[in-house]
Amino acid sequence: MRRQILCLLLIWTGFGVANGQQTLTVAQDGSGDFTTIQAAINAAPAGEKTTIRIHEGIYAEQVMIGSKTAPSDKRISLVGDGIDKTIITSKAGMAAGLRFDQTPALSVYAEDFYAEGLTMRNTAGRDGGQALALYVAGDRQTY
Image (cartoon, rainbow, N blue to C red; front, side, top):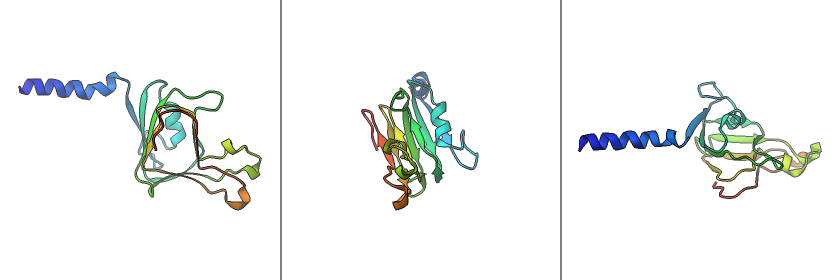
């Protein structure tokens, strides 16, 4: 019985690796695999499920998963430390000559996307013109 449980446990723990699932970590202080969210997304393999754990911090970057002309086939989950602790922010707005779909802090052109425990915000303000915090295009997305 003990041998069967050990065998099942080994099979279960190896199942994620066998199916190409992996976890990447983003931390601004350098303690993770990456210091920016975009770098972690770029490193995620195509067609495989990748969980990106994002440590507490304010990440001032425009993050893109795929693009309008080339949707991503990466299956990404972004998991933050909490909505008041992990923030993706942008101050891009249409007053700078951008289209509305070029202003978000997070743009997702992918299917099977998942996000939890983080905030997406745009701080362009009145002078920045129309702006988005999040732009999505794809099926099976969960927030």
